[in-house]
Length: 450
Image (tube, rainbow, N blue to C red):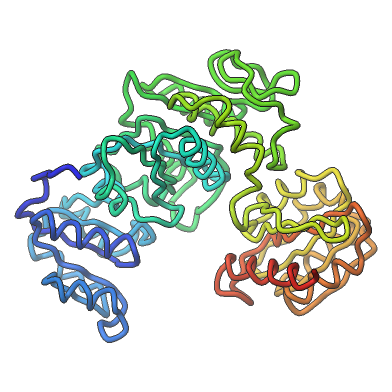
């Protein structure tokens, strides 16, 4: 860890806890800052805040008192999930107090360079692929960020021999100042999180922050198949590395004659890639680009791609039972994600779908149901999804109480060679605490079939 004096004797407010806030508060305390923590959860129900109190850190819990901003703070480290319209955040900005996320703090203390990944879809898969390729290539990577490990905690332990592979959300990227990755990756850009951002433009330029500080000698890997992303790339000062699953690109990664190519060099045959789906091919092209720029051998890349079946809950292969393949895509919490999953299969599909009703209809899903031979529906949106399925010509439709009951029903309707796919197109909160819980329930039910 770099022994920076940037925060010494500074009065800093950490707003919101969760894992990132706890780590940031402890780190700032070690760096000599005068830290105050403010969290909504009452102290009696807040073991994280109690632990910080024991370290000698000032803790204010149970509300966000706006007059707290009158105490002369020089910096606020905000939990990424707290929106900028929050009165505390707005009040801080009106007073001219800088507001950052702990990703910026991680950059300030890290001895290791960053490979940073953002985009609407595919971030976690691309991040994991890059990490696995660097690991297989002996490059000593560490993984951090939105994927589940707190960036500043990882940076605290990193050395110059490591590379931090970090997944970044738009929420995190809105709070950076100097953060500059050695390699930045933009997977794609679609409408998302517009309930958090004030407009699509704000969302887009939050994502663009990943390359805003990059300069010559650094790399921006971007999806050249999306004109909006390509336009964003043209404004970067880094060396541009395009990837495309549709067109040839000599300066980046593409598919040509059944081979994944990087700058004219064949890397791996597409038939030797274990991970299914056109959208995953885009993730693979981005990951191969980053791995090659970091000096990973073709053999190491091929080894990962031959065995990597996906990130948990993201079109994850679960098992094959009596020649039926099962896939867990519980992370598909919207129509776009479910559509991409359905586009990944040439075989007949038994689709398990449904969940939280957010008021939308599912007509956009209809063109992607051509290979679906049967639907097992559940949750609040069951009736809506059934309507679309009937209009798409699906005659085998069965409604069940939950994901666990859907699995044996799907198996009963299936034949050899079919794929049984959980891709709900909905959030899980009507029945399950998280999409991870829903996916685990699905996998448990699959394994019980054995």
